[in-house]
Length: 360
Image (cartoon, rainbow, N blue to C red):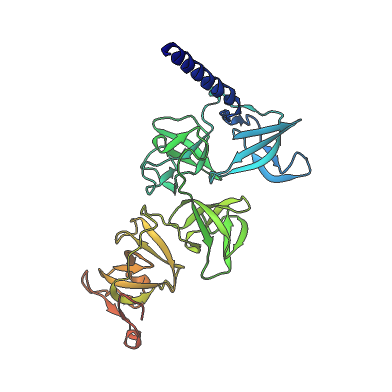
């Protein structure tokens, strides 16, 4: 009886194992995900097409040294994903002639801005030194093109029409978008004085015009100076717009853009710069202090203190300092002390001079 029981048990185990083996082909097999095929354009600029047809030029090109991903090929055509400066992968088609897989010998063609603290953006500097003038601060996730080999912890890069130097330890070399969390900002054109903004080729109001964008148009903000933001428009153009005409306004000082301070008690006034477009809010009472934003004439401010020449103010959820001469009603006394200030005659009839945390 014991022998019969043991033999039966072995038969049952064998049948059970066989049933498992027979069901294995029915289980889904693991899929092997291949790494994207990365190519490089080692020659001159190559036009990008919307489809594998020479009559569908998109207006975009692959610059010399551009790195891109290949999805498939169709005869003499390659279906690709090109990468723009905002870190977006965009589809297109190119002629395969002259293009080839990227190798280690090609070095690093692109890099992604990768500051250890995402609220401390990375300077693009004129020279390979921290003492060199800044061409702007750039957000994590921005894609830059390397145009020289790294040297002494700096590398020369290109972002659109700008060329300058960035620190190596603030870049992720030879990486593709998605390698780091992006902090590239989306902003809306919202010019309080005009129906839109001009996109310019450089960081100057005298720079060539690349086009006009109406209020409500959205752009991607790559970097910012005290006056201008380098942006990528929805139609793919890269240029510069007046930073104060964007909402939310990208600011030069390195702070958490989501921080908001409630309106305090103080003297209510407005920005009034007869000789310019507005006034900078600065972290300290000095023109060399980083800007917290440029606020156009007519913007309401609450004056909470300060000195004769620099007033501590609250404006749109931020606190900082503005020049007293640019705030209506506050005129420094020529013979007064450091803390003296006088109000203009119209103050006598000014309604709602003082506020207690709420607008009058």
